[in-house]
Length: 323
Ligand SMILES: Nc1ncnc2c1ncn2[C@@H]1O[C@H](COP(=O)(O)OP(=O)(O)OP(=O)(O)O)[C@@H](O)[C@H]1O
Image (cartoon, rainbow, N blue to C red; front, side, top):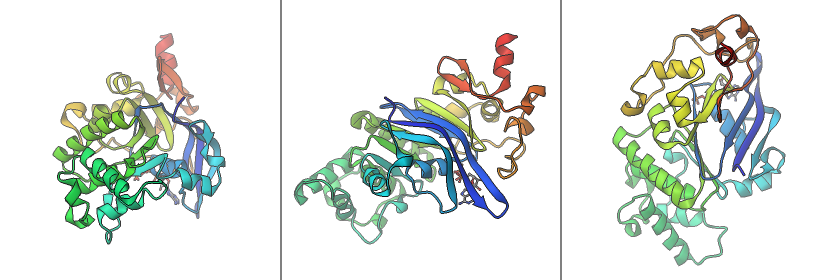
């Protein structure tokens, strides 16, 4: 069973200009023990998606339709207390800025012991687990460093500690939102490698959000390409990156042919802007920027199989298959 199975999720925001449709019919599956990457330009709906999964949505957000099943149970219909019990235990998060996770006035050890408040263990046992987890993410001399405050660590170490804290409860799902974007390239590579090892060891699934195509290619099993609130392509990293089917994915990869080797840090820019999500075009969402648009693009394309397990929302698929 998939750990996370999002089906046809639509989320909008009430704005003075009208309803802003941030996510439309988004379906994403994160299989057991797999790492799924989400890539897309700024504004494509990544943060909205995360906030819907963990149910920490902005007050003006509204879920129009869809399901967010975690281990088979729809999170959207759960009560606040049930969701709170899942957050930090079964579903954990790592953010771009580790200081969002850390309390600056408490030692790392105290914070790592505090987050085990649900576990019936002695303080010494909790401390031992914290030391083990710090060692696992590669913090040297973890016993002594437990007594230090977050500011006493470098940015890379703070992010490792944030990962250690997120994995402390051995969650079934880790949501990592651009966790390495603020780090330099060498640290980024180290952390990605460690994350992969930890994922394997803990046996969790990861939903990994990044602008960085090279990191997605290196870390993830599967990738979902989002554009202006819709999933335009999804499949294995190999299929999507080596045989991209959607013109948007192709444009991203063509802007940056060395994307896998060079570890491009920012998503390449392609000409044009994303459409106004308050006044959406009626047809394909990418048509205005698409170099291959044709008559059929005035209708919205449904998701179709480019190959087994590799889907794309583009009319060209039908054309190329019948051609
Ligand atoms: N609270 C809000 N009220 C109104 N519009 C919002 C709100 N939050 C996000 N949006 C809009 O919803 C759309 C999706 O935003 P979202 O932050 O989910 O995208 P993103 O892909 O995470 O972007 P980024 O990479 O810049 O964080 C954008 O057009 C954004 O302006």
